[in-house]
Length: 436
Ligand code: SF4
Image 1 (cartoon, protein in one colour):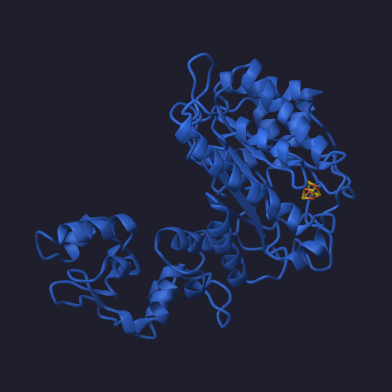
Image 2 (cartoon, protein in one colour; image 1 turned 60 degrees about the horizontal axis):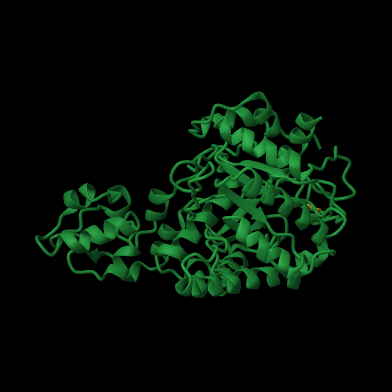
């Protein structure tokens, strides 16, 4: 019975991509588990999904009917709900056997948001207080739940997340009419303000309990609705700026729903689009790019054949080539093939000597890309200039890997992800797909 629940609810949770665990350091002396040093290491499947956590739903018996979701009320799938005692015991046992390094707990809406949050919080209370479990917990907040429940969730979990789901209110109204944008935004604001308040409290009382130490994340479903990458990146920027998001995750829509605007199985959303959005997100967070520099209303979608930084450089040949021995740090960051670390190394090293391409290579630069955009010791070493029309073809990556099926052979692909997990039969079962 429990195994059957695990199979159903593990399978139902796999559509959520937002389960990275970085940034939390929960640990204790009188229990077991450690969210940072000992337990959590990220393990990514070949399709980009994180697999180091027990990733389950509390329940898939949803009273909502979001068209894009496998767990919608109108879908004919097996249903199950864990009791808090069952799920807490399962998590503790799996952790002890080293099958997992933490828990990622989400849920469909059972009865109503408060009832669902109560079930999830009871699970966490048992884990933290009865089992004295100090491992990593990522909890999905149910939009519309009472703020007091949200506050308690922040004290029990390391990371909270509220899925924004679709990139616009219009799409939300169309595909998830029971969800309201305000009900999604409000908990994001509350998490942010509770965290700020918690920081102040901890300045006064170092023993004050931590509130969601790993911060908050969210997930956007990409390709279910017609919004462009421009709209998605604008939304991303505002989520980072307004709610101090640790991460925005992108999940290419998997065709499990039925609605005239949803793409069917014959029109899969390319995983490469998800990958390009992650690259663009990286540019926003670490490379000082603005969303409308990466894409704009005239070129609203990312080029699937080029990484976004190369695409930007090709649109701005007037800025290149740059002299690596004198360019500002900000400009070095914009050179394809030069990363944050290598840009810092260049700035440091050029204080002592004039650098050439060989020095750049030793510093970790990707010369096969950078060579078209830099000069070193007064020399431009490429045979093709930055404004050449053929450079696009040279830098084009094409489709680096074939479109993969996410769930045809989950256990195989999970193990290909470099995991050191030894998965038990029941864990494997939890990761099997739900037949839809
Ligand atoms: S609320 Fe909507 S998205 Fe969430 S589980 Fe229910 S049907 Fe799916």
